[in-house]
Length: 498
Ligand SMILES: NC(=O)C1=CN([C@@H]2O[C@H](COP(=O)(O)OP(=O)(O)OC[C@H]3O[C@@H](n4cnc5c(N)ncnc54)[C@H](OP(=O)(O)O)[C@@H]3O)[C@@H](O)[C@H]2O)[C@@H](O)CC1
Ligand SMILES: Nc1ncnc2c1ncn2[C@@H]1O[C@H](COP(=O)(O)OP(=O)(O)O)[C@@H](O)[C@H]1O
Ligand SMILES: [K+]
Image: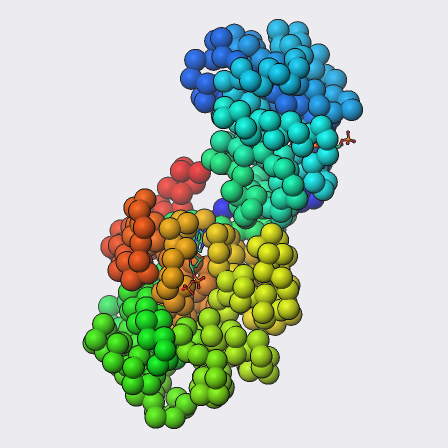
């Protein structure tokens, strides 16, 4: 599990650690890690032209000490001093090593730009002259290394309130910051490098967690030797309508590929015909009234993709939600519960999987505001509605009250294609039916869906059905095809890769 923290959490840990170390130790550790990344990007350090953008705080100090190390190795390093003050000791050391204070015009000649304007001490949108410098730096086209956080990105939330550095690499100190993992901040971060400054044991419970391959290997359900199709998990799917037949096909496909022992599909004639044609494996109940009475036992339900939002759909939704098993609600199911919140009053668990527009309808917020501040809204929704929320989009986040919000990083923008959400609902539903909690089913489902999406796309457009088809391969790449988890070995392997 990778963990990330807010600026306040990092600052608290740094205070504790700093109190035990000689002054300046942490900054020296940060600077040497930063200089190593810069040197790697420059290739030949000697003669390389590096421009540091230096703000008034310790973020600028990191940049200056790294600049000193690069200057000592023969790089031509200039510092643009942007703040009302400058880290004094850092500047003196930089100048002693041959670094020069330069005008912003030096940016034009830079082989590498180091963004040391602001880090975790920033507040609000960048002020002048920082804002203008950032826009100039972004326009140059030279690689940019952001120190700790790309300036303009809120380290705690990933919110971007104006201009922000588009980093090639972000070298972050001590621990990951939440804002580097969540869009729009994540889109500014580039490659993320962590420099260990010894903060580890001083960090509190994380703000955000990111599942790794090793976690998935431990969490993914596997069939035991003596299992059967019922024990593996039976998923009910109430999806599709006369108008939208494809959503039913895609949800059932996602569920079968993600390991449901059996899928029971319930719908009207047109989607039933399509589901039968695509997935003869599914056990079908042709509905002549909106009731799940004759569907048979299931361990979880997926409710909503393509279901419609009329009276029939409402009655069917009410029936599904009156059951005593976990229910995943997606798409039209979310429109139905947005209109009738009473439907959410049930004792068994609920997982909702909205995109920003659907969440906006559910909690009466603005779609753009949600996309700009995903964490804030997904957490508010989980608390307000008392359900687990998987918010889809360019960063998928999973929130449940009193648990660290999970952020998925496996996806690809190629997944922004009609129907891929229906596949995800089937996949996460299948994991629910196999016994995972809403929190784990949502985050493992998002991980697998992202990975399958990457595999299906391979750098080119995909169709939603391709994502479902790529799921077994994605699972194999995690488990190595083994029916037992490789536990400690896997975790150690992940640690080495970090
Ligand atoms: N502590 C440690 O042990 C370690 C810390 N480390 C490093 O220190 C960094 C944190 O340093 P920090 O706390 O000095 O804050 P920092 O991010 O440099 O900026 C604060 C200054 O920026 C300004 N400013 C703020 N908002 C602004 C805006 N919107 N627009 C424009 N200006 C704005 C404001 O200055 P003012 O406006 O008052 O001039 C404020 O005082 C951290 O990210 C990491 O890199 C590492 O070396 C590891 C060890
Ligand atoms: N920019 C993006 N990067 C990564 N994944 C994305 C992006 N945009 C959308 N997705 C993913 O694609 C899927 C789209 O689902 P959804 O919006 O429900 O579409 P549909 O209703 O057509 O199935 C979600 O899993 C979402 O997280
Ligand atoms: K920065």
